[in-house]
Image (cartoon, rainbow, N blue to C red; front, side, top):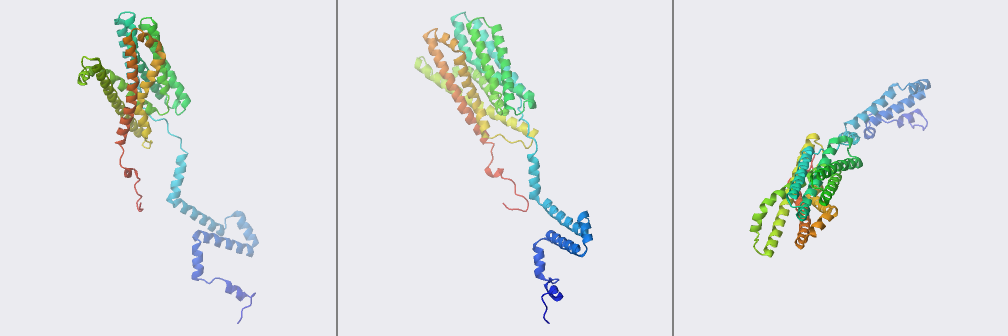
Amino acid sequence: MTKQPGGSAAAEFDQPVAGDPTAAADSGTTGSATAAVQQATEADRAGATADPTTAAESGTTGTGPNTAAVQQATGADRASATDDPDAADAERDASTDDEPAAGPAPVPGTALLALLALGWLAAMLWSTREAINSAAAGVTAISLSAFALPGVISAALVAGAAFALSGVDLLGHRVGERATLRFLAATGAGLLIGLAAAFAINLTYADNATTNVIAGTSAAAAIIGGAVAGARSAPTVGAVVAAALGTLVFVVAFSRARDPLFDLFGAGDTQESLVNAAKWVSRTESLLAGVVAGLLAFGYLAWARRRAIRRNPDAPALRWPAYLVAGAGPGLLLLVAEVIIRVGGRSLLDLAAALSEADAVAQTSLGTSRVDNGIWVLFVGALTALIAFGRTLGPAGDDDPEPVAGTER
């Protein structure tokens, strides 16, 4: 019997047969949630065709059985998205990005550094005063003042930086990461040290032209040191101050070993042998001072790193440029001190050089030696700090993350 195109038999022939594998495969490829949505939609359409009033009520209230099927399908999709670990990680990363930034890195031992640097400045001022007062007035006092000026300026520079660093660290989050406010606070702290040093010099030294020169250059050095402490990388500044202070102490302590070293390097009765021996003694001193500066800078940064980890285990580690700057910092401060001496103390150096031809040669030789010493300390200190930092690094494979269980690299 032939079925007509418009008959009921034709409609039955077009329906999908229950249990047909093709239909089951088609429905399976769309997913259980999508199939539920499609079934609910077809049922809603059939219900709307059969009973318009019921369709209107179900569309208005949204509480019919077909709407519930849609909600269940949507809930299944959301549950599958929540169970996805990648999606959960993305949500956690997004929430982490919204967290506020951490505060400034802690700087350990700033109060101790400030006390030691101020004590060293007081010692340098006292020794210079005693040397000048013990000498006869006039020519000898001027010569001794010129010889003592570099030590006072270096001590004032380090003291201003150490006191300013302690003051900025004491302010803490009031200054925070605001670079301008931090720089102004540090410069102001250095100004206080400079004014105190100048007042102490004018009060205790003899009232002459050399006193005013020493007071003015000491105040300028302390202010510049305070401005240096206003840098944003506070741990690096602390390492520079600690290493510079240790270098100054080492240079003074090394003076006791100069006479044996002169004999070791062949100093004799001739002028040439004395000059050659003095050159090798100066190079040995600079080399050892650079090693001391580099080791102290690395040790301070390692200490600061341990303190930072105890405060925040996720704190980022300092990279190699920080160790490079910290190791080279004492040499840079020595060169800055030399600039201050030649600019602010020019009148005193000229007076000392005009005393005699020997004094002029001595002042020129000492100035050249100080510049060479600063350069040696700069490069040797930077190299020492980098080598010490490099020895703490493990093989490259140790930094790779551990593989997740059930996965392969």
